[in-house]
Each structure stands twice: as C-alpha cells, then as structure tokens.
Amino acid sequence: MDSPENKKRLEDIYNQLVHIANGNFSYQIQRTNKNDALEALTFLVNTTTEELRDAFLHQGFIKLHNSYEMVVQLFFELDEIGQVTRTNPRVETLLNYKEGTLNGRPFAQLLDKSSKKGWKKLLKASPKDRVWELTLRVSFLEQSGLQLPAHCHVIYFPEHWNHEGTFMVTCFELIKNDETDQGLLQKKLKKQLQAHGLLPRPEKTETHILHAMDMDNLRKAERYIMDNLDMPLPSIKELAHICNTNEYKFKKGFKELFGMTAFQYQKYERLRKAHILIEHSNKTILAIAKTVGFKKGNHFTREFKKMYGYTPSLLRKLSK
Image (tube, rainbow, N blue to C red; front, side, top):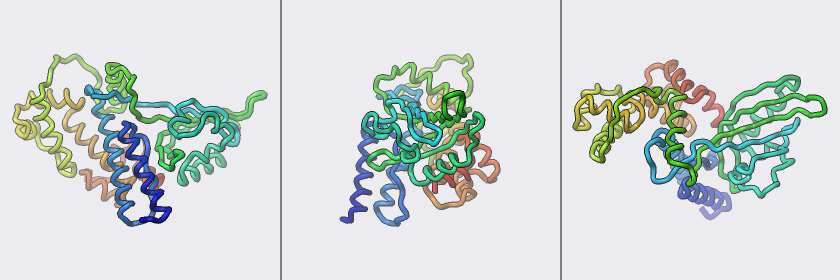
C-alpha cells in the first residue's frame, strides 16, 4: 500500500471524491489491471459518479437544491497535423492547465492511452481533400491523472486558398453551475430528454401538484423497479397497489414526478445499468442484456443504440 504507485492511486481517488463533493461529476479514475482493494474502490467511486450524473440527467427537471448545467462545451481548433491552435477557456479549467499552455500541443497528448491510439489512427486514415465529420467518445486526462470522458464531434475542413486544413472538435459534459437560472435549466433538461425519446412530447394536460406524501409513495414504485430490473414490469394496478393509491393517480403522479411512464423509466434504468456493466465489467454483452431484463440480444442492441447513439459492442471496444 506504501508503494509510489499505490499512493498515486489513492491520490486519484481522493481527487475524484473532491470533485464529487464540489458537485462535478464529469471525471473518472483511470482503471488498472490489478485485482486488489484499491481497484475495487476505484470501480465503486467511478460507478457512484456515473450514478449521480445520470440521476441528475433524468431528474434534473425536478427542482433541486443546486442547479446543474446539462452541457458544457469544450472547443478545440487543431491544425493539419492535429496540434492545438485555439481552445475556449473552459478547456483549461476542466483539464487543469495553465492559461495559454495548450497552444501548439498535440491533441493526442490530452487523451488517455486508448483514446490516443484511436485518435492517431483517425488522423492517419482521414481524407484531407474534402469536408467530413463524425462523433466519437474519448477520455481526456486531467493534469492530476483523472479521466474526463466526453462525446466529441469532429469536423475537418480541407486546405482552402492560403489556409491549411483545420480540425474543429467540440465536446459536451455535465457540471455544476450555481448561476444557472432554475427555470431555464428545467426547460433545457426537458427538451434534451424529449429529443432523445426519454420524455413524451409536450401535450395539453391538466395541472397536478404532488405533495410530499404522494412523492414518498411513488418512490416505492421507483425502488421496486430498480430492485427488479431483470423482471417484467407488473401491471399498473399492481404498481398502484405498491404505492397505496389507485391506477389513475399512479399514472398521473409517476409521470409528473419522473417525467416519463413507469415502463419508460424501467427501460431507461435497464439501459443505464447495462452501460455501466459494459464499461466496468467483463461479462459478455448478451449476459448483461439478460441481467437487465432483455431476452433477445438484437432487441437490446437496438434500444441501446437508440438511447446512446452507439452500439454496446462499440462501447465495450472503447472501454478496454
């Protein structure tokens, strides 16, 4: 435990917990091939961070004690060979670099080992005679060694007149923002969830107001769903019975509290748990699909891609 390597691993865990305490769920600790207590703790902290981040994504429209900005944009402008020419100030803040020190640095140096390898392959294979774009998932390395996973959209503009070819890379993440107006935050999160099919499109409905007792009762159904993700969802009548209410109040109340029906909520949580297991376990994708309640692998793959924009097999490949 006193070796320099283990001290560094403990320091990474400490830094991650500090970020969590400050309301920033963007970072992840780099995994190792070791099979010891520190690696188990690393897995637990990473999983907890994802649980917290995802919880705010699907419950962010409910009034929270603190406001969270759903997306923060990181912008990189790179030259023809992939060196940084410009960034927005947020990049230096999140990656913990001093102002102006990123210019001229190869973009690959900011990535973890796996992402760096993929980026170099992309640079080598990408065409330089036309505009092209793609979206990929990478992990940046913060100065202390923590990972910052992000979805990035890359656009390449070829040489034009006296200007060399240029890469534009934009990334999005979730961090705490105390200055965000609560009302605007709620609208933004609702629109994001609706765009991804996790919330129904707005429609004219009567207004409902949930009381504290109603929310406590409805959370019984939430706990039941979370504890039985591998099982078929009971009927609305049975779920209403669990919540000590009738079917009408359950359907209206659950949708008002969680922004989606009980069936939509179960699917969302199944896929979210599957995402974590694919990234952080060695189970086969088919075994994971069955663990979260999908009987057929092709159905699981289709729903997973619909929610995340990429397949389970691609996520497993990028997580290694």
